[in-house]
Length: 270
Image (cartoon, rainbow, N blue to C red; front, side):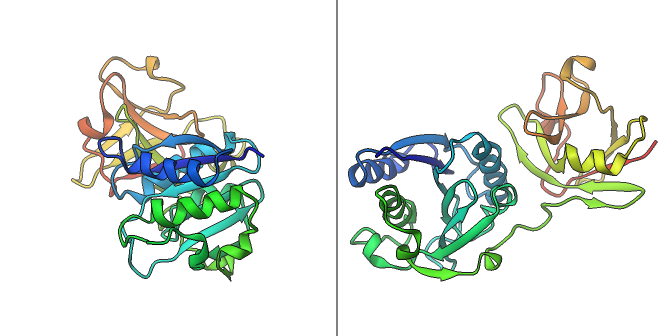
């Protein structure tokens, strides 16, 4: 039986880390199909990894096994977990990486991956992707029940990242960055459905104000696409994954506007 294993990390391609994990998966489960979601998560950036994971999982076929590893706490007391959602099964460090994916695919049960029977014989302190997550995923793909992989834990004890939800009042919405993409566009933690619920029946658009960590304040037009502003001009728009994004037409917004993780985007009614 073929089983899809979707794979996301911050490993990059300069080393053989991705290949080692995939080799373990294919050796232990020769019938599995491995889909690389991305290995370009910024190193140790759990927040960015959480966004990228959640942007891809809705498009996976049902019953996929998702291995996600962005793990600055590898080898410490942080748990390694497997979580059964309504649609998919996720294996990841319990550091908030699954926060957004599980918001859309609510967890039904979870285990700590603490049964050494399903790990490689030797587990490195710094490479759980290869030695722990990959073999556990392969065993799941081979039909091993989730509960055999370790100790059952309450799903509500899983770690969540802070500042994932916007601050919403009658007067304004405030949100923080989630991810900067390859083009330098910055994704903020506000989804279009939350904005529409806040806006109600008002037809007038909101004003969008960007506050950078350096104290700069910039008002942005909220438009449909890049071509509605001139080359080199900033804009806000609803991105293809349903989040509010900030861009500069033809230029990296993160670099030109100096947007860091401490930036705040505020929407107020006109």
